[in-house]
Image (cartoon, rainbow, N blue to C red; front, side, top):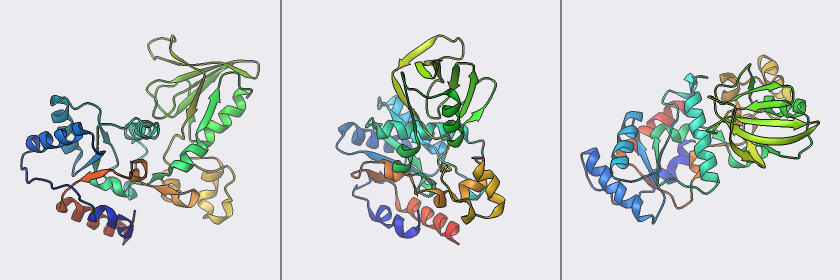
Length: 287
């Protein structure tokens, strides 16, 4: 998001935010607003610790389903591939919001406005639908998973991984609570179910589900590689997901930020000090 694109959010402050100095007092005021359910509220904070403190107060006050949208506090230039937990939570929250299951309140770090992720149209386009009785070979389905950024392992243990053993394919979709197992009979998917790590017993059966991309960008199979520097050709052609590819994600497909996921009537709760910090941060990125 550029400074120009940010202007509507910097100017929009329809709430008369009282000058409450203590986080407990602010939490009480915000909890009362959220429980009225007249609008969807997004609370902008300065640090992850502040977000955690708000979550604790909201929980104590009986306000359930308050969700923190985690984003890298570091500069995008210092993107780390180890941000798996946060990535998994962002995917889960995206699926929750797109399904219409809005949290009571969303908490975001002010730098979340600058964090790019694929737009919803691209998300739906590249999410991989699988259904029971579908005729598709494990080999073909694995090709799709690799394109979406999933990695082969001996045994799945974290989101973004898959493993195949004969007619069984285990996938841990990013954003899912549990890994998924698909069983084949010939070239037909016979059964789909989630399972736990402590045992192979099924937790939930599915007739269909959609496996999202493993990252917040995707490398299109039809990509014309010649438009990119030579050093990126190998990574692109092999669907190798790296921080260098993330840096050119906006050239692969449309990108947006978390705001696109929210209802248009969302009210952002933040003060002028945080707005100024975000403006300075975006100015640093642009220069």
